[in-house]
Length: 183
Image (cartoon, rainbow, N blue to C red; front, side):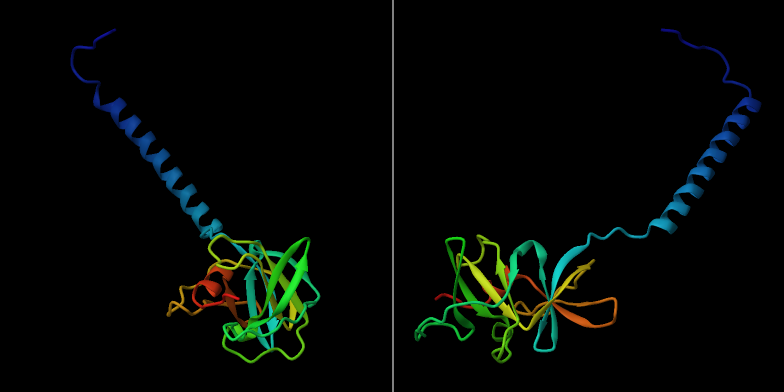
């Protein structure tokens, strides 16, 4: 290992290195500033199934939806402890789904003629095994980049669509955890 003894290098080479370092740092800062201007904040998009619920726009997380189908269910006898939103049951691939009217679950009136049924994926945090939701219609999918936190624990966040409409973002686990939905 070599050791250097003696006076420090002359001032002229230091000035040259310092000028070079300042130029490199200035170039890097300029490049990083330009990159920040063009990229913008990176927010993850959340895909939602767009639903019409008697004129109200709603969205359900696409990852929670197993299948979107025509509204077909079997009526079941009403029990006294059955919540008002339950419309019946539906069998799909050997599983029995409890069919709920989404309008009633959100505090509205029952849909006279539902146009679409969403079969939801089984989630361990939802007390019921299999759930289907009824809505007036489905309008495809939409990506929402961020949703604000709701003001109340039982509320659902609102998001703005590109066309200016406001939509309610529904999380099935939250929908069923805030209410008694046992059958």
